[in-house]
Image: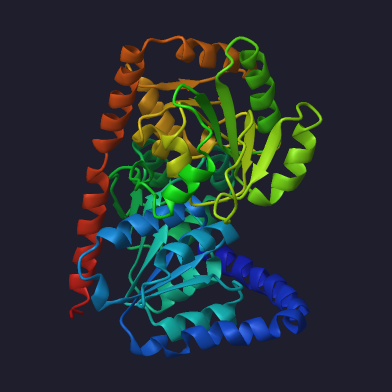
Length: 431
């Protein structure tokens, strides 16, 4: 009976998606033709399809393909949902001839079937929890091995899925194996899936220093940063958080003159309007594109950066990092804290870290790490001031502990690589 209702929902879903597709077709026709031209010749290749959603999952894919054996023996089709996710992947894989990065096209049954037919994957790796009903159902019908890695369900999603448990059960039956990102997620998935479940660990603990840019050029542009400057870095900030950072920065600046603030918004298309808003509070703010050729920047006190791909660099020159979407009014859930911690930085977040709760919970259990979760935005001033006043020995203690903690999690990637490479061997395809 549950399967019957599932197929009724799938039919209704396709009617709605089909109507939307027909409405958009006159405007997207040439995009549609161009899209399928890209994948037309893939059927003759040994393809592995990897699907991810956004920047965080894109970095997981990069870490896997960077380290996997026999990568040159296969063709990889990576599909992604968001623009920023695609930008990260395209930038990294631009010199790889056997990697094709695409936005996943419309989840309309006939389009999905055509896509799977052309890429004809040996097997499929689905990252985290971005479920596209038609694509997954077609993979199941064609009996193509599909695994779900780093699987997670947020608490809010878990409560919603429990109300329509039968639907998620049918969706998850596509996967031959599911690897939840934490024991907490493992317990949640057990309610919907009874087959091959194994918790290996969270792949978002694995990070690479993304320093593949002309650092000498940026160093020259920011050469007016002095050695004794104390830099606060607002990473992946969302609406409202920049004001909180700026207001606390200005209070601290009255006491400590060597403070500077760098803000990198999560969505860089906000930068122009953000500068206008912040200048209503404080005038000495500069907006800069660090990747464009120009003369030395007068950093002033506050710098808004409009680049992606330079997070590692900005973390390295900073003393303390606030990770965004954790005190935001409009968007909540947090952003990944692993990169700044892995680079040895003292990290501050707000209490709204639902999307990374398993990582945060594990970190909170550890002692002597340079990490603080705020219960309220008013605590930010005291936390930054407290860290500023620590002696160098204590600051270095936090730095070493943070680096070692993240380094000790790198075994997670090795376990995933072993699983993926064994599936390659199962398919009997070699160089």
